[in-house]
Amino acid sequence: MKKLGIVVIALALFVVGMAMADPGAIAVNEVQGLSVSTTVIGAGNFNQASSVVLTTMNSDGENDLGDIPNVNDFTYYTTVYTEDTQNSEYGYISYDKDLDVSTGNKLLGQYNVQAVKQITYLGIDASSILTTDYMMLDGAGADYGTVAGLMICPFGSPSDAPAFCNVVETGSSANLKVANMNTQMGERFITKTSDPGVQIYNNVAVGSYAADVPSKGSVSAFIQGSIKEGGQDGTGRRNGIDAGDLAETMTFKDSTSFAGDITSFAKSMSYTSKLG
Image 1 (cartoon, rainbow, N blue to C red):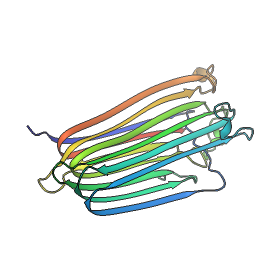
Image 2 (cartoon, rainbow, N blue to C red):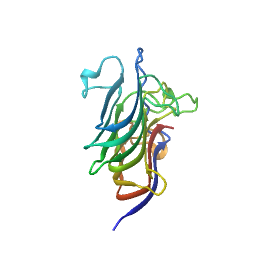
Image 3 (cartoon, rainbow, N blue to C red):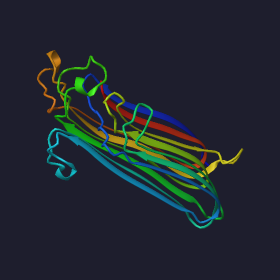
Image 4 (tube, rainbow, N blue to C red):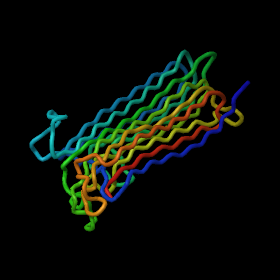
C-alpha cells in the first residue's frame, strides 16, 4: 500500500532576555570570502561534496586559539558545514547549489555561512539519489565585557555580560528515486556588536516531481541543541547569581521523517540567541 505524504512544520526557537548571550564574535582585520556556484544537468553518475570548518575567537590579548580550552576573558565560536550528494547507478539529474562563506561582520538578515541547493532527479530501474546536509554551531564565552558595552543601544545594562556555552546542530537527509528537493541553511555568529544576535536556520522542502508525479523515497530533518547561560548579575531577583555562574540550562530536539510517495514535505527550523 502506498503512503502519500503532506508534512508542513515550522519550528522557531528564540533564546532572548535582558542579559543573555550569545554576543557573537568580532571579525578579524583580514576578512576572507568564499563563493561556489554549481550546476549539473545530465544523465549518468553524480557525486558532490562540500565541507567548511570555521573557528574564531576574541580575547583580552593574552590568549589565542592555541590556548583553548584554558582561556580567560574570551568569546569563542566554531562551526562545521557539510553536504554530500551522490546517486546510485544511473539517473537523470538537475542539480544547482550556491555556497557562500564570509568571515566579515554580519547584520540582521546576513550570514557567515549559507548554502542553497535544488535537486530534481529521476532514477532508472533501482537508481536513487542520496543527499545529506549538516550544520553545527558551538559558542562559549566568559568575562568578555558588560552588556551595555556590547550593544549599540545606550540603555543596555551596566552589569557583566553572562558566561555561556551553547551548541546547536541541524541537518537533513534523503534517499529518493524520484526527487524534487530544495534545502536552505545558514548561520550568523560574527558581528561587530551583539545587536544582530547569533542565528542558525535550516529549511527543507520536498515536493512533487511533476503534476501527479510525487517524489518517491524517504526524507528526514532535525534540529537539536544544548544551552547553558550565566547569571544576570543585577539587583533584586537578579542579584546573587554572578555572570560566571550557571543560571539556566536548556536542551531541545525536534525531528521529522517520512517514507513513501511525497507530495509535500516542508520543515523550517531556526534558532536565535542574543543579548537584549
